[in-house]
Length: 233
Ligand code: BEZ
Image (cartoon, rainbow, N blue to C red; front, top):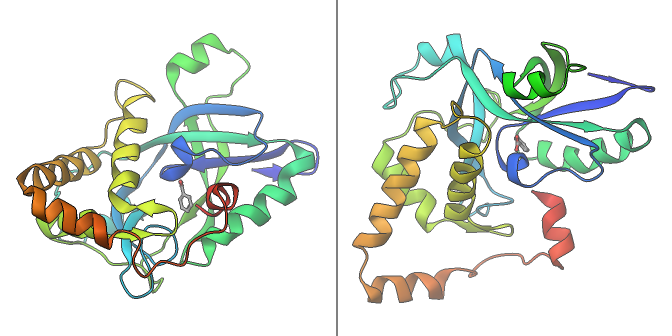
């Protein structure tokens, strides 16, 4: 939802949950309906490279998802995340900042957002729902990967790295951030993949870990500063 006087509400379901946009004045945990969150978007610019893309989350329309063959065969119709209110004076600046993310296949959609019941109980001014802007990597976008074998996906995340850091860090941060939103916000797809990654890490011997450390950073275009890194993902 956006207008010149009320500002913009933006819904985050991935890195935005733990890495907020600049200039927000309100963060509200809650959910959107009729989507499924999956690690099905290739990342060439943040958690991978064009030569070796990593994997980040996108949302799939629940009805479309039902027509696909997903090894994680169950998914709730709610996707938990956080809505951020961007004040009117900063809307343009934040949209320009966020549009950088569109380059890698995401497009803008609007969808109703439902604040967590506990938040509404403590703030009577919040409506039951309101419209939010959300970035979605649609199935038609070239970075959309679709269903993948879960062990292969976990191994892929484990080995990937990009200018914003290691792909596994994105997965582990998302898992942790989801645990903080509400008692219902854990996402089985995310926590199962994180568990598989941790298992693979444990199974690796010290030699393999040393070898991996040597490769982290190879072939990356380094961002110029921490500030710039924060700005791109
Ligand atoms: C997010 O919700 O964190 C997000 C999703 C797509 C692009 C950028 C951020």
